[in-house]
Image 1 (cartoon, rainbow, N blue to C red):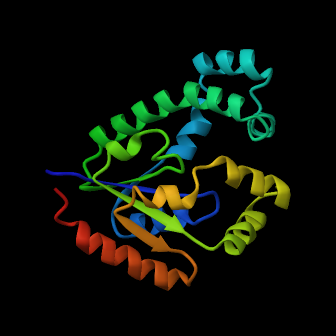
Image 2: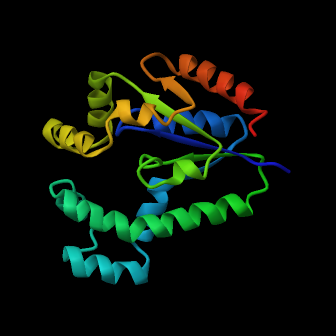
Length: 189
């Protein structure tokens, strides 16, 4: 059976998870890179490396550190990304589903875009993005903006996309876009 692997990416608060959940409702298996990162923060082998660099293994405190220091963010990514990428590849290999969606904010930055058949970039306007994040987190507007600015700009991500999902409308609008992508992806080579 030929598996179809779709990577879903976008900026912080763009709606990647919403798009991935729609794919799941339509029968795809979804692999969430953020959840894997959180799991690896509890891995005993990585915990000691993280503790040595950051002085803590508390996720919230690490977030405060790395989102204020790009060099430390890169160090954390160097520790976590190889583990997460390997785990994603293991999960893809083990699944018996034909359609696999990898939900990864850093899909392109980590090089995972080379592993997938198609890349979907989820976009939304800036004010919607800020509002969504504020509803889901306790981060201040300045903290949110700082995190968004640390990511690859949307216009750069769009250069790698095969499809773009516009997340400025309703869930119904997003579902229509996802279904259209799914129809177009059936014959992925």
